[in-house]
Length: 285
Image 1 (tube, rainbow, N blue to C red):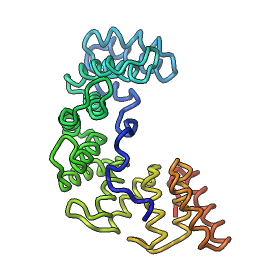
Image 2 (image 1 turned 180 degrees about the vertical axis):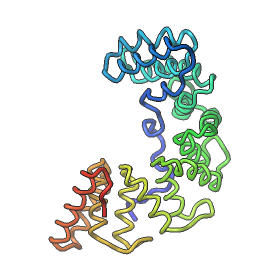
Image 3 (image 1 turned 180 degrees about the horizontal axis):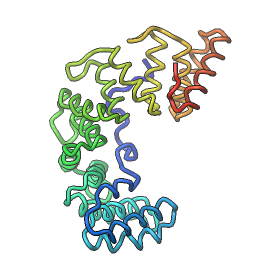
Image 4 (image 1 turned 60 degrees about the horizontal axis):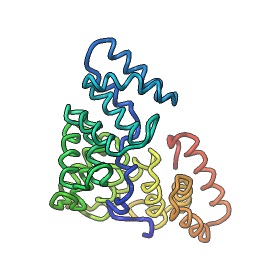
């Protein structure tokens, strides 16, 4: 099962998987009069056009007035260096201002900064506290991240059953990472659950959202008849798709499985992969 890794593998260094990069959540945090709403809308529009100076012009005065959404947006801009010199310390300061007002996305990003030690000394216990604040508001990514903290024992006593609980909350909201991690728990039998058919179901839900690890795992399951009926065409298809999405081991697995397939079956698998991807994962085997 070369494609399978336990939940939380390759966690370290992958801040992008746990960090909110966009500012759409700004709109969800609006409070104030209509002029603030208009300024916020103008700032968001400018940001997504790539006119960062115009975005700053709108966000800065709102942030100074204590608007949590504008503070969050400026934190994003400082973290990624959009219109300003990239500054993790300033991003932390801005996320904290918004997080202290209950802004879930800011709480989630600040948690990630603590977890990876970006702009602040690494502190997994503080990361757990902040993820929990966001997770308790229904923030799916934070629920998945909190599950990983429990599964790995990062900043909290390791507890696989609690990890499953948080993964399931995220998965039930359609979060692909939560679905993948819950599938992995089912596959490995962690947290008191072991059901490879259920693992395949959750991997498929994540795979249909473009999750490369889930796609690669599905390929392995179809190749070996593990929780599903063995089907080399489907295995080749998912390996191929995962490879397109950057999964190097899946590319190698696709080449390996071709040695066991007839040319006609390989052609069918390639056709299925193209159909699956072109349909946005709506028409897959």
